[in-house]
Length: 400
Ligand code: ADP
Ligand code: MG
Image (cartoon, rainbow, N blue to C red):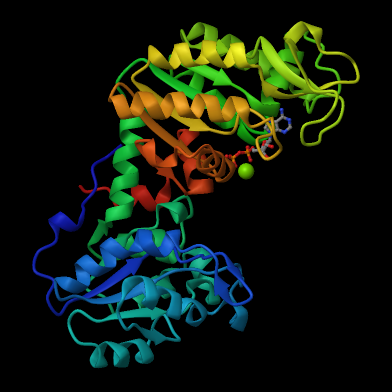
């Protein structure tokens, strides 16, 4: 990964206009913000710039208005929630460019903050239209990107602006890039990856990339069934993509060639129906699954063996739960391995990075999210990074 500029590289910003891209794509219910994680993530960067005397103009997208002004997706709806978290008064500007923004800047004093309207109200945003980029940039002195979660998109506010203004990574972006660099860029070895979740098809590129990068690949969740079936194991009526047997075997061969040890469950938790604590629940060897049973979690002895693998590793990257963790007791393997990873991290012997919507939920459920070295809440961008792709929003920040 190439180096990038941070807020530490900024000179005097007093009175200057900062265009700051953050993630305010907030979950809402009945007009209320239900989770303010993203607001809190944006706060250090915005307040640091404001406290240094910049006039901070916040850029963000909200929902998918597809180039139209959709009133239910106006960023004015989240203004109050952002003011509450920041503890500051914030101006709302119903445009992203032009005279209205220029006039607003005239009213703002150094250290003041404004939120500009949803960037996706303009068709040029998702097209990365140079005219829109130029119009937004005309009102700013420099650009800060603090939205890693949007960095896999080459949009006007995530990529275009970085090309025409002096560009810097915000504090959240910086923390994310530094954590990801430690996990897969130049990691301490051995490195283990846990990849789980429902389907192989959604994470094929992740698996293909990881086998060339990590020393141990632990495969769990529904996707393990596809690998087991490809190896000739009868997985009963488990969730399984039988048509991907060839691909699964190619991944296993590639792993073999690059010296990556793949760990598939040898013991599993099965049931005849997918329900909480079903009467038919049992633990068995992976070769003993009956035709009317489905694999819903990794078995306890197999999890212990996986914990032993983690104990030999210095770095862990985790995406995807090991079982159907939303339904008890199929959360047990995920919770047990997460607790091991958390304990090793606390002891200082493991650097642990995890990401993915359900993965974060599972680690919260296990009560260990705070013990991991870094938890990424950037769904799509995190997965593309795990695929080894260069993210346009990050590439555009690279210093030269
Ligand atoms: P993430 O959002 O972290 O990337 P995924 O969306 O890929 O994770 O996968 C999470 C889903 O996989 C969960 O809903 C979980 O119930 C499901 N899952 C895990 N193991 C199994 C299994 N053995 N059978 C069916 N579903 C499973
Ligand atoms: Mg998911």
